Image (tube, rainbow, N blue to C red):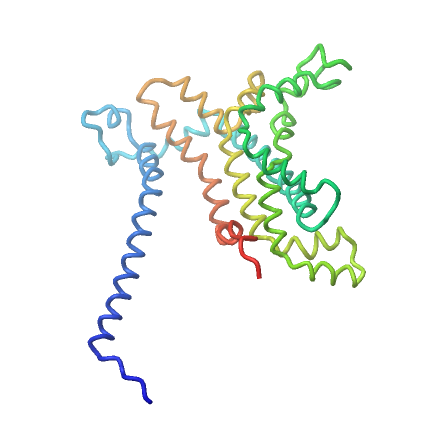
Length: 305
């Protein structure tokens, strides 16, 4: 029996419904994109306003005389280059170390069975319930009284320990529980048969890990790298705590935070907004470079098969 052909009117209604659904979907996405981009655009315009335009009532929203030199003043009147170099050094060190420790620990928890592995996994999950703020004071004292560091004697007295150094800014973040769990989930998606086949071919464990398994979890690595980079590029509290006596080690967020406290005149807000806009450019660049891996990294390990 032949199937009854669809009437032309029904086909037109179906096609129209499909078109409307697509238009609605992209309209929602466009509205969401505008909501996300608008604060950055507003900050950019604010950095171009003159003091008179900012103090005018009502305030002038679109700059009539854009002050492009504010972006030059950021580097000439502020130690922005020093802040930028410190941010790059600290952020890249933390990101590299966390990716190394997270991948190694996550691989061990995902692909090896040893005594205490379940306890370690439970500890990793449980540790995520404790916010970083609870650890600031204990970590501060551990660094302050570190033996034989920063002028300290064997008992941790007499100096400043590891404070006011890159080590104080990096070491507390060498291991992240979230990173370990994220990479474990990524490694869980790698079939065990691939690893067993490599072992049968005579490959060592480190070679399997570095040359076979790691390339398969690049989306997870990229996702972890994005999270770590963005968080520590914008981190303020810990960096400000351990660099109070070393302004030459301060990063961009700390410098801008102190800048806001130093300049309370409304006429200097354009300079502040220019500094903030410059500080977010690296974050946007890193995200755009790695965003194609982002969704795949978040969903890695969620579906088996």
